Length: 338
Image 1 (spheres, rainbow, N blue to C red):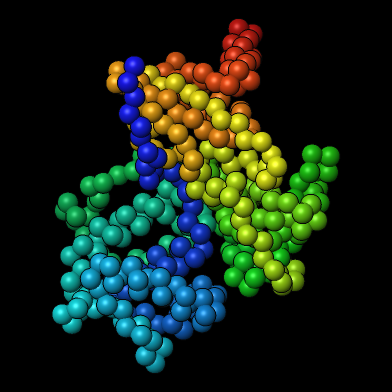
Image 2 (cartoon, one colour):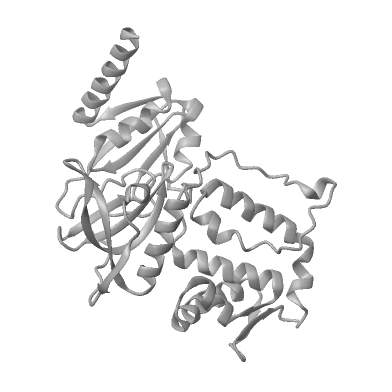
């Protein structure tokens, strides 16, 4: 049977933007809407240094240039954005402003806290909801929304400030034999939204290894605990954008390649999304497909495949097939008992 190689797409994984990405998004949106941004206001809002603002501005300026817009140097603490012709950008995009704001509102609702808190101030306070067709969006997103949790948002804000300062984060975190938790000293690297929860990815100083921590399980508000002299580089085996394969081992941990066969009704939809940065996909002539994912925990792929019901089947390796059969047998027994 012939097969056509399908390269991983950009996907629509439920990835949370980093603090830096949120700042750049806010900077670009404010420049698009208002045509100008005050550096002092930006520094106060995000609690970052002037150096961080200039670094963010450099990246945004490069993106704007590719789209044909011009962002000025900083003059008297103000940055402006105009069209090459010199026309006011705010007037040029006013017609589409409502669509942008509706998309941002949807993004905030889908991702919940803490992203919702970050994007809350993007909309202007004097917007008139009005009536008619333009008062409601045409495009809707039926993603499961993360339930707002102010504790998670508070923890995120604290971690983001610590990260911006280049410091270690100190907090209490549960352990299986110590429910009140143990103190963790972590070099924060990133926060990832995955499967309805937010996770801190960081290098644990005492354990001397990369770990992840669910923000809703952190028992105390993170505090800065000394400057990081030499930050660790994120190793290649950790993919922050991966929807599957988040379980973190170390560089010596063996990753198993698990292959799943997908029936034609769901094949094209499944392989058109990027679940993992190094996934391998094949779309067959009969409409079926196969996808190979690399994980340290086989159960991740088993649970993912079971989500497709009888339209997906693990075909290799034997260990993964046996684990899928075991999990199905346990589920069947539970239903028989009920």
